[in-house]
Image (cartoon, rainbow, N blue to C red):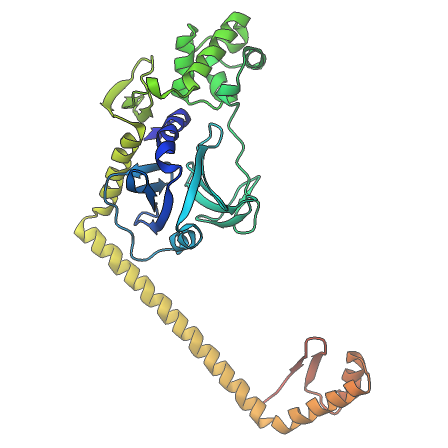
Length: 374
C-alpha cells in the first residue's frame, strides 16, 4: 500500500495529541523485525508500531519475537520511562522525529526503513539498520543527517518560483510537478485538475496566470486541515493508495473508508503482520530444519577451529618448555643490554650469534619474536 507524504502529514496530526506528553514504557521487536513501542498516554496504554514504511498505533495484538537483535533492549535502556515532548514529520518527507528531553528517535519510512536513536546534538547512538548512502552514513558515532528532499516543499511554493521551474522544463505539466516538487503523483494530477490545466500540456507553455493557479492548487492540497479529512483506501492504476480525502481523478475506485488515517494503516498493516505469521506447517517445518542444519554446520566449523587452535597452542607450549633454559638466558641478556642503554638494533646485533633463534625485538611494546624448532 502506498502512503503519500501528505497522508503521513495528516496521520501525524492525528497522533500528536495522543503521543505528545506520553511516557515510553517498553520497546520490543516483532517477528518481522518491526518494533513495538508501548506508551502510557492520557488515553491509557497504547502500542506504537514502527514498520519499514509506516508508523501507527495499533488495536491488534502483536506478540514479540523470542530471539531479537538486541536493538529493542538498547532503546528500552535509554528511553524507558522517558516522556515524549514532540512528534513531528520532517518537512513533508517520509521521516518522523520523536523527541525526548535528551534524545531524538528518528523513523525513516522509506526504502527498507530504519529507526535511529540520536542524542541532543543529533549524534547517532545506534541505528536499527546500519546503512551507507552517497551523502550520509547511519551508524554509531556519526552525525545524523536528514536525507535530501525529493524536490521543493509544496507549502513553500509560490507562483514566481513555480513559474521559473515550469519555463525551464521540457516535460509536460504533471511530470514537471513530480520532478521539481516533493509531491505524490496522484496529488500532482489532482493539482492540475483543480487548476483547470491539462496534465499533458507542455509545462513551458503555461502562462503566469496558470502557474499562479497551479501553485495555489498544490498548496491547498498540501495544507493539513483535519476538518476536511475523510480517509479512504482506493485502487488506481492497479495500485492501492491511502488518501486523506477524495481526489478529483479518473480511475479511482474506493475500496473502503475509515474514521482516521491511523485506523486505516493499522487495519492494513496488522493484516499483513498476521498473514506473514501464518506459514503452512510443512513450510515452517522445512524452514526450521534448514535453520537447524545451518546451526549444526556452524557449530561443527567452530569446534574444528577450536581444536586447531588448541593443537597449535599445545605445540607452542611444548616448544617453550623444551627451550626454557635458552629463553630464560635470552631474557636475562636483554635486560642486561637495556640497563646499558643499548638500542634495539644494538641489542639484536650483540645477541644474534649467541641466540640465533631471536627474530625481532620491540622494547616499546615489550615483545620479542623467536623461531623454535622441535
